[in-house]
Length: 415
Image (cartoon, rainbow, N blue to C red):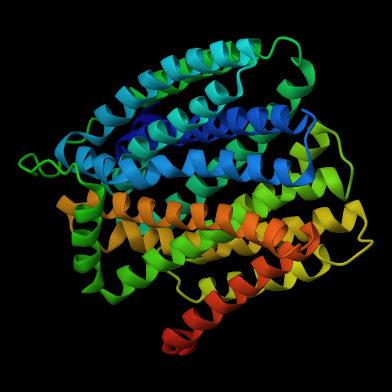
């Protein structure tokens, strides 16, 4: 008993950290379960290939657009109030959103279903800056990269199970999809309970003036970040990652249906393969960082991402090899994003972490909206097949990795 007490006192951050991880896991699960459920219900309706691609892109854009509109507000809330209280309030709001989603699904009303996706995007936009901003406040500094690795692992485990659950819900509740909405509402309450166990950290900047204009505030934050070269590059690297990840995920739905002819549940398993790779890569990056920010992992991850897309766009690839390539793609993504996330959390001052995370969220979801546009332009404008869209993703990763390798070339010779 004395030994257990000593361990608890020497690691006071552990309980709060793991409750934060549980809250984020639930958030990722619910976001992706609802989004994938609605997308699969849309794809099950009779429509042309172009209409399917447009509706999938629209769903992605509706989820992403609130991050453009409200991430800066979320950043202000994270700096002005306790990040724990912000997260708990947002989690309680999610319960109401899921009840609305259950109503929309029960009515089989596409505009309302898409509205539910939009509302979940609003919820996550407010939640994100507090989630990332609190990490350096509850973790020892030498645990930050490790904590980011665990966060990304559980995030993508949530994506795995959420995406698979969305496919399961679509297959199991075709006639009564509102049941899925009520299940997700119950899960939201679990997330709220976990959020209340996160440490109630004090406000970082209680006199921070209210920021309600996302354009001017984003511009102000970008000018400040521009003064810090590492922070500036990390923001654009983060944006590039989310552009690639979103384009891969949207294209994967179409590829699974049109090329591989998979069922809704099997479709979700492809996303699971991708998420497993990202989770494993994130944990590897967290441990490989050895208590510091390891910049050399970024171009290595980009190279793995680029190479893994080559077989994905090849004609006649088997399902097994495609899944292995997806895992490799995710692995590279995990190596790429963990050091970038650590930079975004470590470099800002204590009273501006929320604002920086808000700006990063806006930029990353500009990348996601850009991916929605790229999906429509490549598939409907230029007639690029779903397989070759993956090559475009690989090219984007290669360019990003080459830039990072060149701009931080001295890091490769550091011991």
